[in-house]
Image 1 (cartoon, rainbow, N blue to C red):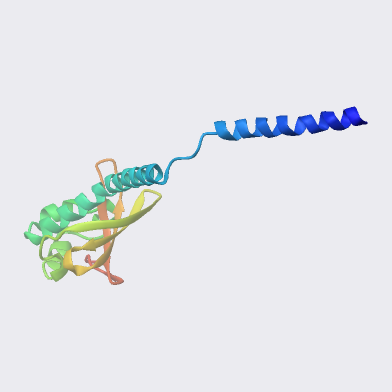
Image 2 (image 1 turned 90 degrees about the vertical axis):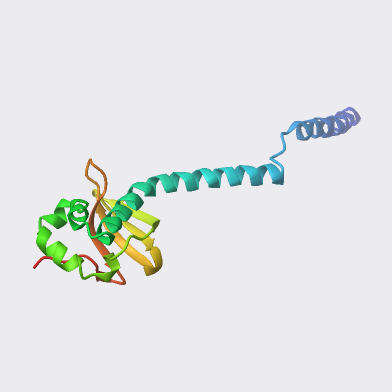
Length: 161
């Protein structure tokens, strides 16, 4: 029993030495500065990816507002989705768009977020000093086309007669 006791006793210091060696060899995590840089880089890449995904919708909305703002309603009508132009004639669109003061000048568009389902994208946007708009786009092969604009819960585009 004395021999067995001594064997167990000798195992203790050996085990402690082995444990200390294993812990000492373990790779530490990144320093707080390294982690902050990695997080910042990941955030920057994510923001760039989001901006790139929003860009086609921003460009389509700005092109539409530039056209209506300069009185080029024919070009503006050409930027609308077929689902809209199938219901509203160009003449009806031009007649009503001319009197809509929200469409009277070119404004910057900042897309805050989008959600897409079944080929339709709803974009929440800040439009110049006019505030929050929701613009609905269809996504045909040629790029986004505007199917509807809502400002404060009210439709901004003329509806069918």
